[in-house]
Image (cartoon, rainbow, N blue to C red; front, side):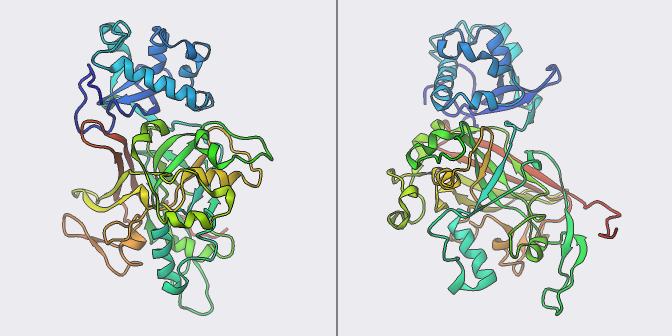
Length: 436
């Protein structure tokens, strides 16, 4: 990638090749505003636009108000061609040999006003999220969990390799990275083997993580009009990292016959910077089982074999007062279905997606030990504890534990990364007993 006049650390996830979008505030800003991340800085797009920073991009002139909103929804709704132009324009502004030096490179006043160290910004949810759907497209995760509960012969349900399985989640409890997570309480079976099965009310004892990616919708579709598979990707604004926290013991009791409810609705954490699909184009890769494509119904068949992305994922766990422990690595190529297929399947009934809707990938696990995207898999259902850096062990999350997800594509010096997706577990609320 071309060098920038702005000093960008070689290990930064926000190289000039990236230009992810987010929403930030600072001590001096009255309200959250759109921004991009580049190196160790955020560029306040509201301040940049107000100072005629987009003067050399006529296509955006009728829409400059999108950079003064509290969310990215208005910008996302402009569509992929506009996102592409804005991203390429901002890349040109930051190039060492920028054709527009007067806009920022040689404008010390605007740099002071609009270029803000990331350490001085507060990140907010990048989009106003109307609806949230979580898919189950991680084949290895689905198989591993199926083996734990049903054995190898019946690990996958008959529908699994015919459609992207999913469920509708809770949008209101999606939070931005850094937000503490209160341990949920609910009904669990203290003794799952007892007969009759009678639940108790208790704080979750099997609190887990789920390593996922998620896609934000840019432009939706009309009710009753499905999005064709070959057009689906143009309806995606970009991707974020996601930790879909899971209360495994609450889920085990409630999920039959309609699936997860309280086990998932208490919190879902996403990273704050949206990485555009165009930034990921150089990293296209084949997902799992490409030979399965021909057995899919026509509405799910993609013309492109490389329908996924080579994005490296990792999970780190730090106990209270301890040192971080790397506990898992995976890759987005471990998905059986692409986000385009998820969009096509979601809308095939005529369901209308809207700007800001979020689609989760499902847990992304590999096949080898140490590539699992959940503690449930990593510990073999709680039978094989993980040893942390200080010698303590974990089966599931304890109070005070901090979980950090990271994801990056590309090589050092031109990383296209997502930053961090972080959450710390707080104790369950007291004086809850489940009684009236």
